[in-house]
Length: 171
Image (cartoon, rainbow, N blue to C red):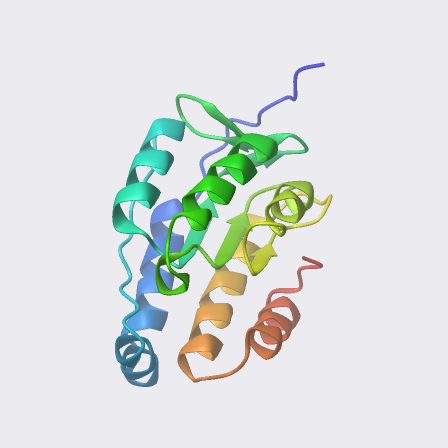
């Protein structure tokens, strides 16, 4: 059957602001700039936006904050299935040098564990919210703490653990 989509408003702008603040933090800015990491907040209305912008910008990190379900991610005008995005990443990453490949995908969406797991064959790391619904405030805190810790030079594992602990999520 078709997944039911809750139409409540997500606080995407709030998440972008807090993420941007974590990047602008003095330690974070220095850490990320030295490594050539550029934070470009964007909003994707549909799947073609995602594919076009990932293909053009060649990010090493893709961060989704949207509605999700067991089969994939819901955008305002379309749906992105995990197998389709995994196939895109396979071809995208196969054609690029290591420094230009997508290496980390973070999915702040309900029931996004299967989506993230489907990507791990083609990216180094993928983080989702398991089989649980993502609480917006918890997801925002998770994002903020994850990027703050990465900006301080901590490992992804340590940053993930800090973010999960601070937010109360079981991602």
